[in-house]
Amino acid sequence: MVKKTESKEMEEEKPAKKAAVPKAEKQTPAKHEAKTEGKTEAQPAAAEPKKMQSKSKAPKSSAKMDQQAAMASGECTDRFCPVHGSSKLHGRVLEGTVISAKAYKTVTVDKLRSFYLTKYERYEKRHTKLLVHNPPCINAKLGDEVRIMETRPLSKTKHFIVIEVLTKK
Image (cartoon, rainbow, N blue to C red; front, side):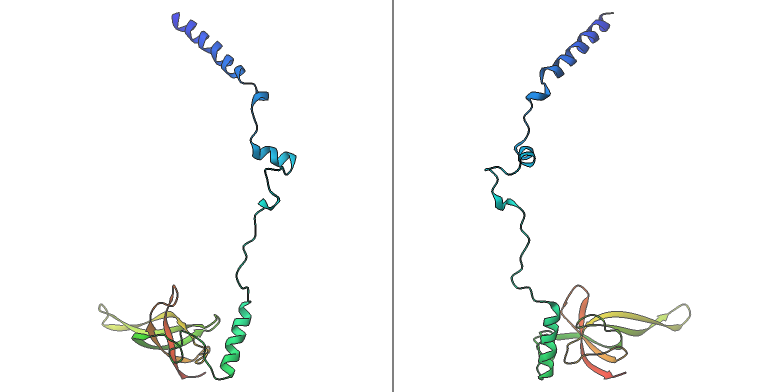
C-alpha cells in the first residue's frame, strides 16, 4: 500500500511542472518574428540569396563555331590534337570502326578481337567499345576505319586519340 501512495504523489507533481511554464511566457525566435512582421532594421535588404554569376558566359555553340572557323583557315586549335597540339602519345596502337560520332570531339570506336576458348580449342569473336578523342583536323565520321593510339586520361572514360582515318565510308 505504500507504493500506491508514492505513485499518486508523483502523478500530482508532474502536472504541476507542466503548469509552471505557461505558453504565453515562451519567447519566439527572432527569425520567426522577422518572417511574420516583415523586414526589420536588423535584416538588411540585400540579405536575399544571390544567383551565382560566372566570369564569362559564352554559349557552347560559339566555341564550336570558332573551332570550325579556325579549321577553315587551315589552323587546328585543339590542344589534344596529336599533330598540332601538345598531346603525348604512348602505349597501344589499335584499329577499329567508328560506330558513333554524336558527341563533340569524341567518337565511339568498336574494336574486334579474338578470344581463345581452351575447352573447344577454337576462337570466339569479342568486341570492345572505346571512347576516343576525335580532333577536328582528323574529323572521323560514322563507319570510318580508324587507327587510334593510347594517351594520358583526357576524361573519366577517354584514354585514346584518333591518329588517322584508314578508310572513309
